[in-house]
Every structure is written in structure tokens, then in C-alpha cells.
Amino acid sequence: MSEVKVAVLGASGWMGKVHTMAWQSLPHFFGVAEARARIVALVSSSPDTDTLAARAPGARILRDWQEVVTAPDVDLVDICLPDNLHYPVAKAALLAGKHVYCEKPLADTAAQARELADLARAKGVITRVGHGFPRNPVHDMAREIIRSGEIGEIRLFKGCQHVDVFGDPLAPMMWRADGTLAPTGIVGDTGSHVFSFMEFLVGRVSSLIADNLIVTPRRPVAEGQGAASQDWAAVTNPDASNMLCRFENGAAGIVDFSRVATGRKFHQAYEVYGTKGSLVFDYDQINRLHFYTNDDRTGRRGYRAIDVGPENPNYSAFLPLANFALGYNETKIIEAWEVARSVVTGQPMWPTFEVGHHICQIVEACMQSSRERRWVDIARI
Ligand SMILES: NC(=O)c1ccc[n+]([C@@H]2O[C@H](COP(=O)([O-])OP(=O)(O)OC[C@H]3O[C@@H](n4cnc5c(N)ncnc54)[C@H](O)[C@@H]3O)[C@@H](O)[C@H]2O)c1
Image (cartoon, rainbow, N blue to C red; front, side):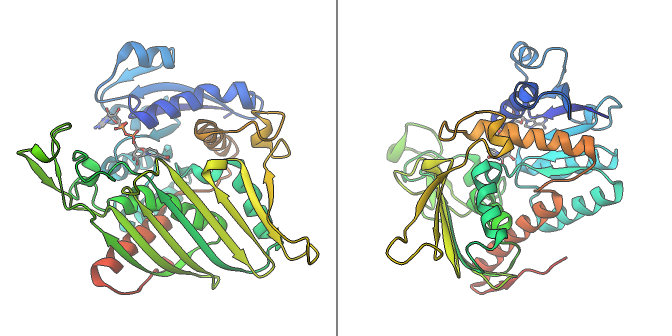
């Protein structure tokens, strides 16, 4: 099979739009020799039919995801639905023998994620979770440096991700702050992105202690009413978290993330310290890595800034020169390309549902640790 027939579920939303664009873009950047993708169905509970039809000419426009998970003309089910639908939809698709590409977080609980990973293995299908940030080619460079031993044994990882959507205590309530609709709050939503970097660069986490905080306990329900609101809703999941962890390889981690960092529109950064050098990344310089090595001679040591460039094939697919900047959407195109290639070659690529399960384990351990005020071990299951 060199053509992968795709159904995009949640097609009208943000990720649905991005994934649809990504599938349609593959020939532009990656050609058609190795793999092709064709969108055969777009599913949305609230479809703007004309727009969706224009985005993927020839695709069926449907309202019910049940119609595509068993459809004979669908090879790959691409899930861009709200979090609570990931598990039931992925399970139905796997039972029907489909390859599955699911947005993050893979599931609401680690047990659900485990079940999905086991089912996928039993069915022998390709799986992929949409933890796309580490697929920015700059992080391939970081992983290559770490794996080559250039910065020695990894001792410490520091990572963070912050936004300020809830920095203002009078910003109106939204579903993301409702523990019945989003049980893990910022931990599953944003923490999971930092956890994906930890998994990609350092390895599995073996234990952690987290302090989750609800910074603003109630919010006005309607936009624009502020303190005059007659109607307030309780914030029932974490706004922020500070976490310490240990990795299986002995490294330690310091991690923080929140939705209340006033002024931080989108802040994502990490630092990796080894016995011979270190790496520093900041999303504000999205394709640039800062690299320090003890191999430089005394008196000349310092961080050097390295821009990922066309030596990385995923970068050169887009641009012939370094420092032209690949952004979020290009990273999603790379992700879709890797999924298509995995389906065609039968070779899974990071992050599979196994990795998605480990990230769900970290999320769950954060919730348990904060609730019970103690370190929590993460078993290898
Ligand atoms: N990887 C990333 O960087 C990233 C970024 C944003 C969101 N996400 C994840 O992507 C997923 C979707 O988030 P979003 O921001 O695109 O949400 P969204 O609200 O913009 O879109 C969700 C879509 O699903 C549709 N939908 C809801 N219930 C449905 C149902 N029962 N049947 C069919 N369609 C249904 C809605 O109509 C909407 O079009 C979430 O799991 C989120 O965590 C990932």
C-alpha cells in the first residue's frame, strides 16, 4: 500500500484544520514516491460543509465518527476530537483493524492508554500520538547530541511550558478548567507536552513528586462580566504545577507548567545538563539549540547557537537554508509524513501508543502525588 486513505475526525476544529492541511501538503514537501495520503472522509459534529469540501475535494463530509471507524475505504483513523473521545474512538478503530493517529493526550487514564497500546499490538497496526513539538527538526539535533554522548551522562533536565489564558482572575470560565470535562487540567493539557520532551530526550520517568495548584478558585461564567458577574463557576482542576522527578537512567528533573503565567503567551523551554556539556532550547528561537561542551578549550568555553538546517531531511523538505524558520504547522506536516510512511512501511515511529501510555502514566502520577502529598513510583507495565 503506497496510498494511505485517511479519515480526519473533529475536522472543523483547530487540530482538524491543521491535520487536514498537513495531509494535503505532503506531496508539496515530501513528494509521492515513498508514500501518499488521500483524505476520504472528514467528520465533524458541526460541519461547515462548503469549507470542509474545499479543504479536501472528493472527501465525504460526515457527522458521526461511528460511520468511518469501520468503513472499508479507510486505512487510518486520525482523531482530532476532544480528549474524552480519544479512548472510545481509538478503541473502536483498533478493533476494526485500522491504523490510528490520535491527538494528545492519548487517553484520560493510564489504564485506558495501556488497553489501547495492547490492542494495537495485538492487531499489528501502526499507532501514533500527536505529541508534535519534539518533531521540530531542532530536537532531532538535540537527541542526536545526547545519544552520541557529546554531553556525557545526562544528570539534570529542566523543562517548562506556560501560557497566560487564565492569568487574569476575571478571565471567563471555559471547559478546560472544569474537572468533569478535563479531569487533569493543566497537567494533561500542557504538562503532557513537557513530558513528551522528557521521554524523547532523556527517557522514562521512574518516580515524581508534584504540587498542583488551583490559583483562581472561581471564575465568571460569561465573557465581559468580570467582577460584576452574578454567575460564577468553580475551577476544579489544576491551573499550575511544579514537579520534581527521577528518570530510570538516574537523571533528575525539575518541571513547571501553567495557564496563569501573566505575560507568557506561549513559553516552552528546556535545559539538559550532562557530565561533559549541556543543551538549552527556548521556543522563542524555534529552530535554534544552544550547545555547551567541555571539549572546547579553557578560556573559549561558552554556549554556541546552532540553527538546524537542511542537513536534517525533514528541514530540507521545506527550506534550503538554515534560520528561515519552520513553525508549528510545518512540524505537524512532518508528523503526518511520518505517520503516512509508517503505515506504508510498517515501521512505527516515535511517539507510538506505548509512549502515549507512559506520558499518561506521568500525568496520573502527578495527580496522585499532589493529592497524597508524596513521591509516586511509575511502574514499567
Ligand atoms: N498537539 C497539539 O499541539 C495540540 C494542540 C491543540 C489541541 N490538541 C488536542 O487536539 C484535540 C482537539 O483539540 P482542538 O483544540 O482542535 O479542539 P476543537 O474544539 O477546536 O475541535 C474539536 C472538534 O471536534 C468536533 N467534535 C466534538 N465532538 C464530536 C463528536 N462527537 N463527533 C464528531 N465531531 C465532534 C467539534 O465539532 C470540533 O470541530 C484535543 O484532544 C487537544 O488536546 C493538540
